Image (cartoon, rainbow, N blue to C red; front, side):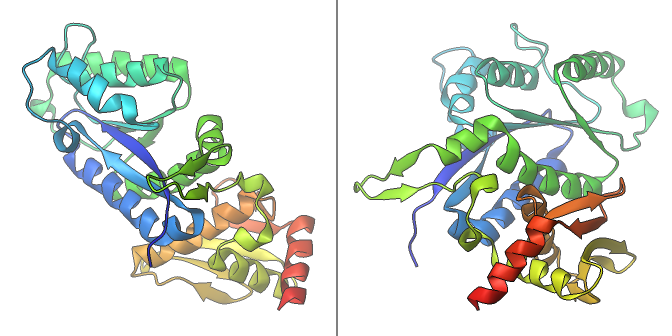
Length: 291
């Protein structure tokens, strides 16, 4: 079935020592599209200089990337481990220049730093010192994130990408205030702000999870991690296949959706236990009455 969606280009900015993380971020965006693009009329497009630029001797290389690749992106994801990158003449590295240009344009950036172990003999002291200085600069600008391994990066990026799409003012305005018109003149409404979204726009997973949680006496939803994998549980029922990351992503997204709409509230500090709110119970009652 053909459908129209608002495309959000997302720039992947990094030096060359985090290729696996770049691949993980791309896969996470594609997975998000598989699950959510039809229901939200929104799609995410990973963008990088290696996929969206072409040979051209018409100017400074980084400037061409800035003008022809970066300028079109609405969100930037920066990833670092042990290197900052090669100086461009205008900035400490191409990645740094991309981040600074993106922020100067008033657009959001998510920046990650790896704390994974590294062999001391493989470190370039100059690069690492420059990276440490840039990390301090980022801390002064806002919130950064660290991760310890590939799995940790994936889990954090998937969850925090949802938060950005739902709560970052720039992205919320981009998706909620514009009515796009495609090349054929067909109008398609972008997804409304989550806080104002009607119940009819709740995902099927969010509805099922809320109904199950309110069917029991405790009104609790738990996000659990075991040696066998991750899954979501409510009223004694498990949701998601611990061996299938895509299945788990759908149910974890449902939790974020319910929290963002005020139907759940997190309890504790680990992000593992959630309790249904009064608004959540009222919504569940209306959903049952509509069946």
